[in-house]
Structure formats: structure tokens, C-alpha cells
Length: 242
Image 1 (cartoon, rainbow, N blue to C red):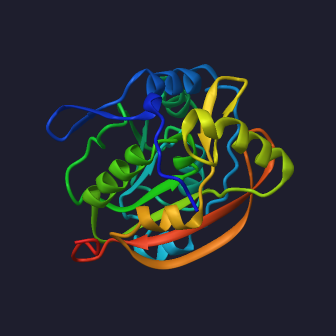
Image 2 (spheres, helix red, strand yellow):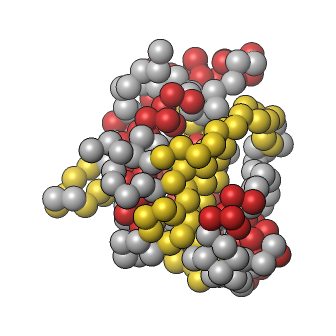
């Protein structure tokens, strides 16, 4: 059973009502992504059929955690023409603007998505949760994604699941005492990541209607294989959690 303890180093804090301020742990993550902005290659697969079917090539699509714009380029090459990218890394945004100038890019603090309610026909969330170890921050993000999607809009979630091989088990067990959660681990290069249970991701998505769920194998940014999950969700006319 997944534990629910949260490490203090990742706990978001309330400074004013409704506004989340992240501590140094989150700032350190942004610094890491800045440092590797021109070094990492992302290869998480993107299937666009459901996006084309439900949002259309002219639908407004947000890639949250867009990195250097790899998915933006794929969407552009397949005919999508109304694209926005958001990321918390200034380095990644700079690279995206230089290499994939097919979208409007916005640098954000990560606490809020800087768009008004109902702005998007679809939102992509590709291997973002693995870079956001704190459950509270993840829940806040899903609330924001629900807000910026139009009714009937699509949330395309794809992320990494907990693995059972010896290498992953060792690092999950090594870092569980520090982070209070099985599946969170640190890399020597300076970043904290998380692999998830399917049940946890389904709880995050409880406000949405589930269209489809698929499990598959994905390549990580460091070239390893990992269990992964793809969830196509839809914003209903009312919050299903209410």
C-alpha cells in the first residue's frame, strides 16, 4: 500500500490564502533543469489521435512542462497550429524558443498556470509528475489543469510507474526513509524523481472522466526502460469529485 507521508523538503507552504509557495527543494529542481537544458533528450511517446479527434488541428493545446519543446515540434509536424508551452525552467524555455519556435512559451513559478479558466481544448502532461515528487503539489497542479481546460477538453497524462526490478527496488528502499514515500529517489546528478502507483494517479484524476488507460514501456531521460501509463481524461460539465 502506498504511504502518504510527505517529506518536509517538498511540502508546499501557504503564504496567503490560495497561493502556494514552494521551498528550496522546488527551486533546486528548477536549477537542475536549467543546468541540463541542452544535455537531456526526452523520448516519452506521444499519440495524437485522440487530440486530433477531440480538439482538432486548430484547437488550442497546452504542453505543461514542455521542456525544450520536443512534443511541441511533434504536434507542429502533425498539423496542430495553436500551441502553448509552459515550464518552470528558464533554460528549457530558452532552448524551446530557439529550437522549436512553433508555440507561445511562458515561464512559470509552478504554483499556478498563468491562463484564464477554460482556455484550452487539450493539455499535455508528459512525464511531468515524475519531476514533481510532492503529492500536494501534484494535486494542486491537477486542480489548475481542470481550471484551464474547457468543458469537454482533454487532459493527456503520461508518466512513469513503480518498477519491480532490482535496480529500482534498491533506490526506492534507500530513499524511502528520507522522503517518506516508496517510489521517490534521488539521482547523483542532482534531481529528485518519483515513480507512481496507478492507484495514486487515478486518485489525482478523480475529477475527470476517464476515456482510456494504457500501460506500456517507456525510455527514461537517462536511457533506461520503465513501466509507464497513458491516461486520456476529459473535463466533465461538473467536477466528479464534488
